[in-house]
Image (cartoon, rainbow, N blue to C red; front, side, top):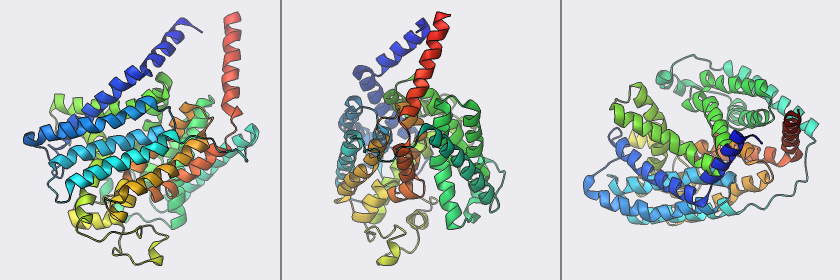
Amino acid sequence: MSAPSGMINDLRSRLDSKTALTVLVLLHNALTCLSLIKVATFQYYISFSVDRLWVAVIVAAGFSVVSLLFVVARFSFGYFVGFYFYTMILGFLWIEVFSHYSYEQVPAGISAALALVLFLLPLLFVKAPLRQRIALSNALFQHLLTLILAVSAITIAVAATYNFRLVSVAHIYDYRDSIEFPAAVRYLTGWVSSTLLPFAFACYWLLGHRWRAGLVLILLLLFYPITLTKFAFFTPAWLIAVAVLSRLLEARTAVIASIFVPMLVGLILIVVTGAPLNSVPGRYFDIVNIRMIATASSALDIYNNFFSSHPLTWFCQISVLKPLMHCPYEAQLSIVMQDAYDLGKLNASLFATEGIASVGIYLAPLTALASGFVLALGNRASAGLPPRFILISAGVLPHALLNVPLSVAMITHGAALLFVLWYVVPRSLFAEKRSSNGERSRSGTAG
């Protein structure tokens, strides 16, 4: 091993130590709150008052004890997802202190904190591997990757016949509401863009097939003019960022850095430049600090307000259940919220939909616990796979989970499909790659 490589590995190990992780998560907690203070100057539905700052600091500091779970837990798919949800709940507890909406705020805050803890317990600590009754050979797995590329290309070609517009990100909302896909195309679009292509990218990237990995990124980018979503536009860049972070840092540190660094950059840009949201620094702050992070937290505030005075759904919003039971809402919950608050379509995470909207704040912790066990299947299906591979292949799912119900993430965005793909990956695939790299390294040294 060369000296620079040894120094890099030593630095990675030091940053993954308990002391370094503790410092990093505590800095992340502080940054999340500081970012929300700045967000409140741009978003009227998020409030801030100096008079109640001391209350918010006490609440955030008390809740920050939960973040120490990420210091003691080992990396897994659940670790990745769990840290993003932790950030969302921390943000909600901060926002709730200043909220101008009317609902039982103390019970709602306690419910959210308890729900997260119950959610994290299986998500962080249930890792027993599933017995791999179906394992593909390495050669057959390569054919599966080729099939994924073929299915992706066909899906893009078919979806493009329904919509394909080259417009700037600023104008996507002028056209997006008019886009309609048949159900089959809609599901395929979600599976390919959220699961199949990120999975293929992780495989090709870590196996050293850079040209094929680049082809995957091009295919992912083609979903932007089809779906006209920021999610599609930024996915290729995000996967590259995750790949780089996971190369420079150990997996746990990379997870924290993947949300800490972008949020820090956004806050610095907006504070130093004092720019409006329609500027370049402002757009970055809007995309990362507001839409990626603060919006998911504020959705809990809004859902608490709405369902404190409206009927609960008891899961009737799930499409397969809606025809079988009485439902007080004909439209999707995102549209119900849009009509009630005029904030656009407000999709929300499992904490808001399967929790607050479905069963109310007093039973929401139980649905969070059940959701934790569902997502912990990802830990069990991916057991034995390299952390970098898990991190990259699941790269877009935490963002999806923060913004859509669990049922939508599992089915429409293909999280369940990713679990199946992890399950059938031959565990020898990456071992052979590491062995090959080691042999080449030894040959080079001997020469």
